Every structure is written in C-alpha cells, then in structure tokens.
Amino acid sequence: MTKEIEIVCPPGQQEDEAALIKIAATSLNLSPQKISALKILKRSVDARGRKVVYRMQVQVFVDEVYVPETFTVNYPDVKAAKPVIIIGAGPAGLFAALQCIKLGLKPIIVERGKDVKQRRRDLANINKQGLVNPESNYCFGEGGAGTYSDGKLYTRSTKRGDVNAVLKTFVAHGATEDILIDARPHIGTNKLPQIITSIKDSILNAGGEVLFDAKVTRLLVEFGKIKGVELANGDKLTAGAVILATGHSARDIFEMLHHQNILIEAKPFALGVRIEHPQEIIDQAQYHCEFRGPDLPPSYYNLVEQVDGRGVFSFCMCPGGIIAPCATEADEIVVNGWSPSKRNNPFANSGTVVQVNLEDVKGNENDPLRMLRFQQQIEKLAFTAGGGHLVAPGQRMIDFCENRLSKNLPENSYLPGTKSIELKEILPGWINERLRKALPVFGKKMKGYYTNEAILVGVESRTSSPVKVPRDKETLQHPQVTGLFPCGEGAGYAGGIISAAIDGINCAIAASKL
Image (spheres, rainbow, N blue to C red):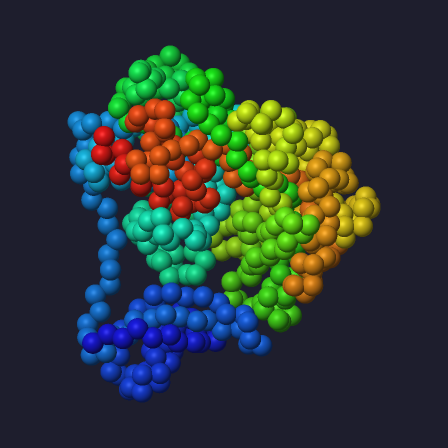
C-alpha cells in the first residue's frame, strides 16, 4: 500500500533517504523496515519559525515495490504533415511545436536570432564590449529570453494547463527531476541552453523545421485568412495557421502588425529598477541566522506594498544571481537578472517596479504603440545617462530615498559597469516617488533590506509586453485574421517560461482544429 503524508526535517537531511524513511516511519507508527521506498512529491524551505526546516509531501511505499517513473520522448514523424508556422523559438514557440508534433502537424519555427552556440558570442560582446546585436541578444535567439535569463519555473498559471506536463518535458530533455518537487523550481542559465537544444533536436528528429536568422517582415493575409509569412530575405512560407510567439521585446513585429492594419492594443506594464544586495544580507534576514550554511539554498524574497494607490512590487528575484544587460538596440539600457543552477554568486537581485497604467502615458489614446514609445523613451534616457557602452545608471538605496547622489557605488554583478546617477533624472516622477516611499517600508518588513550596501540599477522595463495582440477567448484566433494565433508573453497572454509554454500548447491545440 502507499500513503501520502507531510514530513518535516532539519537542513542536512532533505536528501538523506534513510533519515527521511525513519521520520516517515515514526509519523505512521511503523517500523522503518516496513517502508520499501519513499518518493518526494513536493519540497520547500520553511523559514517562518525560529528554526529553518524542510517541509515535504511524500509518498510512502509500505511493503510494496516502487517503480521509478521514466522520462522519455517519442514523437511521431510529421515530415510530410500539414504545416503550422511558428514565429519565435522561445518557450511558447518551442512547446507549441512539440504539441503540433503530438497532434500530427509539422511545425516550422521561424526565429530571427541565432542558435544557442552562436548566440553566446553575441552575449559576450554585450557584456565585455557593450555591443548589441539587434537580432541576437539576451531577448532574441534560440530559446528566447528564458535561455540566458535564468530558467525560473515558478508559476501561478495552474488553471491554464498542465504545469507538471511542461516540467516533465524539461526533465525528458535533460533537466534534473528536482524541478518536479521543488516549490520554486529552477534550471539555471548554465544548464538551460543544453536543454533548449535538446528540445530543438526533438523537433528536427520528428520532421519539423527550425529556421534561424529568419526575420518575419510581413504576414501574408488574403480575405481575412492567414496564408503564411514573408521573410526579410524575400522568401515566402505558406501555411493555413501561424502562431505568433515573438516575446515581449519584438517591437518590429508590433510595428508590422500596426502597418498592416492588424488590430493591436496598448497594454499596461511595469517600470522601475533592479535592486541588488549582497546575498548574505538576504540570507540573514530570511533564515534568522548569521551564516546560511551549505544545507540551505540562497534565500529569496517577495515584497509588495501599495503606495499612493499603486502597487510597488519585487519581480523576478534571482538569489545568487547576476544583473544582465538585456537591451535589443544599441542606444538603450535594459536590465534583467539571472542565476546559475547552483545560485552561488555573492549577490541577490530583483526587479522592483511600479505599475504603469494607460492613463499615465500622454499621447493619442487611439495609438496602440504609445506605451511602447514610453518604454523606449525611458530606456534611451538610461543609456544617455550611463554615457554609452551599456554602462548603466546606478544609485545606493538610501541615497536614492534621500535624494542624494552616491559618492561611489558598491561592487555589483553588472558586467558592463555602472555610473553614479540620481535615478530621478531618468524615472518619471510618479514612479520615482513611489519607489522612494516603498523601499523603507520594505526594510521594515525584511530586516537589513534597507541599506546603502544595496544598489539600484536602471532601468527594469521589460517586465511584460506594452502591447497586446487580441484574440478570441474560445478559438484563440485574432479577431480579424482567421488562422493567426497570438501567443505567449509578446501577445500579452503569459508572464514567464511555464505560462508561455502552456499558452504555446493551447495555441497549437487550437491551430489543429482548423
């Protein structure tokens, strides 16, 4: 027989099977010898009490043989099947392609950027020389923004689709089984590229196609129906279904849609800074101890406060992480964060942002690109303030809140470098003031957070797409163009790797019904 129970163990025993079986046996009032195996279903760190513990939901096998689950991929051959064009090779596009194959359709992925191997060189140029390739960077290329932006798999999108199925697909392509059980699953930027390449190989081996350095410049539409796409080199690809999964930074796609009179809408997003602390400050605050030790992961936080009727919140927190330059043009500054699989860097960073609503941005209310223009304007101001070469404007936390230029900046993880600037010169006043009010309050919620050892780096502006591509709730098709399926973060329907993957799956299912 099997039983599901919760057990609690101290740090150091979370991976000790014999110790966990003994704890489970005590809980069930059994002899440990009666338990043949124990499977961890969910695992989380609980730091709410005076002592930090691991909480686990486990399945206990009593006098029963445990057969471990195997994770394999076996996709049908779709080389000669009906084609579906997928624009973008991020998580939405890749999982849409896998789902197409399962449904007997041939996916043709069209990706403007490069494959993982070639993309690395362009990222090195960004970090070391401050040079941005507009077609291959942290946002564009195989795997999309997620490939080199951490691989955080935490999501609240459990009602949109099968989260566990997505996680198992990652495991089948090389991720560790830990992502199936950890409360905040994470792959790591150092491991994710190989997994993304393995997913691409599955698509190719099944007869799908993946085209790199292939930029879409026009949708082919006749009498309100999609017919295919035209590429920058003049090639035309034909299909009766096109899944638009281009991510939140493909501004040229939004421009293209607007130019073709295909309906798009302005959309709220969030804007602010990325805040970095020494990781030990966060660990001490969250674990209530001077030293974290090797048996606990680097700690994270999630902070939110209402200030003057508007939410100020942390976003995409990266324990043991690095601040990355994520601009897609040469004259803008955009920062994001990522962590390696071990999360063993000495800093912790998080986006800290304020919601930007439609009424906050002046301009023609009928212009669907006005939020994008506003986002672009702030990023260009940040670039000018930094002085070029992707040097980012920065300010110590208390200096920022007290309207004081920092005499110097603390050591930090942003490789192109930082320059001391008063961030109020870049951020709109209503965002600047809400951040100034929120940070001391965050310091009251988390001991040690409010400190001049922390640096604010600007700007965090790509939290989500500033444009929405509308679609019908039932068919998932664009209301004007039959066969066009707006998908993922870029269309406004996802907010991370898992939710984007699920949306890709849903769009592929919808496309199969044509």
